[in-house]
Image (cartoon, rainbow, N blue to C red; front, side):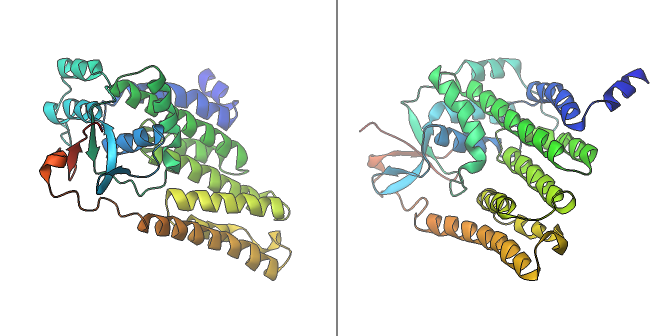
Length: 314
């Protein structure tokens, strides 16, 4: 009872951090590499961004995503060779994991993999920063993966901390939702959902603040809503987060016209940002036909990817 009383006296945002850090440590240690859904694709995409590649690599007459071959080898050893991919009964083999951890990065030996590179780089920035830090020390593939995981969690925890502190209502609910197993599992991975969930929490908490605490929606609040709208459109363009602006009551605006202009601009900014990014991607033909002559590059098929090619130094 004393422990419960002590926890009840802690602010929800600080209580979230107190509980989230050890929870994340358990998640990071307990979850084997690449066992979060599609984590290998998110890892490869984050690595590309860590090397400063926002767009495809130009390869003679084709384009693709170029990464060190060791990244794919680490994924293959950690999952496919141990038969634990999509297999709840499978167990991690310590010897195989030791081989995966011992793999050197070897950035010069590269391959091309087909991953979803049309997605905005925004939800991969924290992971890419962690991987970039590892590149300075020439860390191995799995070390890079875990650095990406750690940076993703730090970003998630920071935004959820501010979200719980921002909302004037349901603070405990926000903290509990941020600590749910699914949310924490994704937060402790290189998946883009770690950023998506965190930004969504902060956005909803800010809407609650405007709806229940702020007296009037002025230029500063409108600018913040526009920024949230653009960021969310770049992260998850199909979730229509912009429509949540309708929870702000009319009384918070100067009138119906003011409401229509400000709320309408938020919705417009959301769809405009999503449309501009899609239009930008449509200008880039992702994976056009590769050269017909097999001598130009060595093709081989990798599990889970449609095509890969070994790059030859120019």
